[in-house]
Image 1 (cartoon, one colour):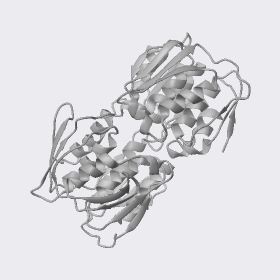
Image 2: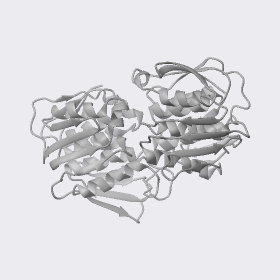
Image 3: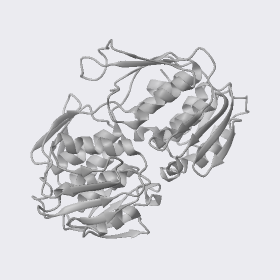
Length: 437
C-alpha cells in the first residue's frame, strides 16, 4: 500500500500501544508456566499474533476476553506434551519471536521447524544456534537463517555467544532455567548490544524468583537448572520504541504532543529518545498529573513534547537503542548542523539495513547524509527543501515507514510512502492516530 501524506503541524494527545518486547516475553513465559496466566493490555499487532500462533503450536491455550486481556494456559515447560514432532512455526516478520521461541523449543525433544517471511529468512540466528549446540541442542538451517529445524532437549553446559542483537542472550536466559535439575548453564558474552533489553529479561527472572548470577557488565552469566516459570497476572507497559514517532512529530512540526501510557521507570532503553530530544532543543515535560484515558487503567502519567526554537544537531550513541535510528535520523534532518548517530552498526541487521536505507531515502527529500560503517551523519539545514513529487520506498520495514511519515508531516510538499501497511507490525493504528488525527 502506498500512502500520500500532506504536510501538517501535529499536536494533540496520543495513547501509545503496549510494548512489543514485553508482550512477547510475557507470552512465552506464560506458555512455559504451569496454570493460567493473565496478560493485561498486551500489544495487538502482527508480531504479537505471530507469537501467539507459535505459542499455540507449542500447545498453550490462549484466549482474549472483552477487556483486552490474554488468558494463557501454560504447558509447564513441555512436561505435558509429546505431539510436536515436525510441527512448523511461521513467525511472520517477528525476529523477537523467532529468536526467543527457538530457545523455548529447544527445551523439548521433538524436532520443530521455524520459518518466516522474506525478511526473516535473511536474518541470521547462527550465534544462537551455535550456543544452543553447546547446550546439547541439534539444529539445521540455511546458513543460520530460516527455515530452521531445532531439536532438544537443552542440557546445560558452558558456552560463549557474541550478541550483535540482545535477543540471542534473552532467548538463553528464558530457556536455561528450565534445563534439568543439577545442571548449570554458564554463558560468556564477549559482545553485547542493546543491553537494556537484557535487563528487561532479567527483570522477569527476578519477578519469578529464578536464581542466576550475572557480571555487572553482563559479560558472564551462571544459571542453575531445575527452576520453573510460574503463572502470573501482569500488565504490559506502553512501548517507548513506538512513542519515539509521535515525539519525533512534535520535534519536527512543533507540537505540542502529549503522550499517554508510558512508565518512565520501565527498563526500556528507548526512553533515551526523550533525553535526546531535550538535547536537540525540545521541551520535554513529564507530569505527575494523570489522565483517565489509557486502556482500562484508571490513570496514566503523561509526557508532553513541544518545540518553539530551532532544533540543533549533536552526537548520540545508539548502541543500546538501535530501533531509534530511523526516528532520530528524520528528526536530525530538521536540525541545524550535523547530527551523528554512532556505535550502532547492528542497525544494519534489523528488518533492513536501516543505516543504508535511511541514507538513501533521506536523499530523496534533499537531505545530505554521510553513511559510516557504524552509523550515520545527517547534515541538517533546519528544514527540508522542496523536492518534486517525492516517493519514499518503505522497504517493508515498519520503523522506516513510520519515520518517513513523520518527515512527510514536516515536508514543504506532499510525500508518498510505499509498503505503508507494514506499520501494523508494531503500531496497528499509527496512521489513524498520528497522521490522520
